[in-house]
Image (tube, rainbow, N blue to C red; front, side, top):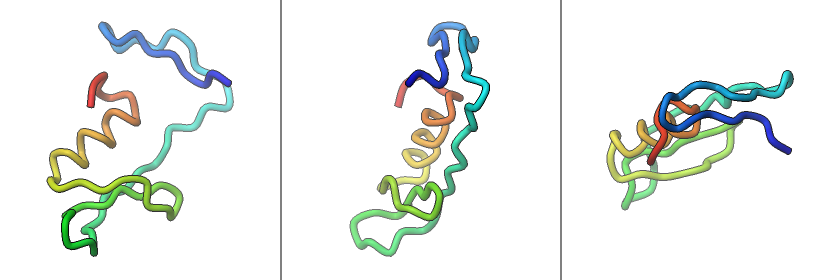
Length: 69
């Protein structure tokens, strides 16, 4: 199922399904000794990062605010 198509050059939304909901991702301090930040979606850990910048970049990428990780 295709939910959203975004032009990577212009960041223009070419298609978005009427039921598309932007994922709400949150950044939290990690309890893991090798990583500083966890990214949480719907109460579930989806990613871990060593820096805050990496976590922010991932969230922006998943929300189509940036076009590369």
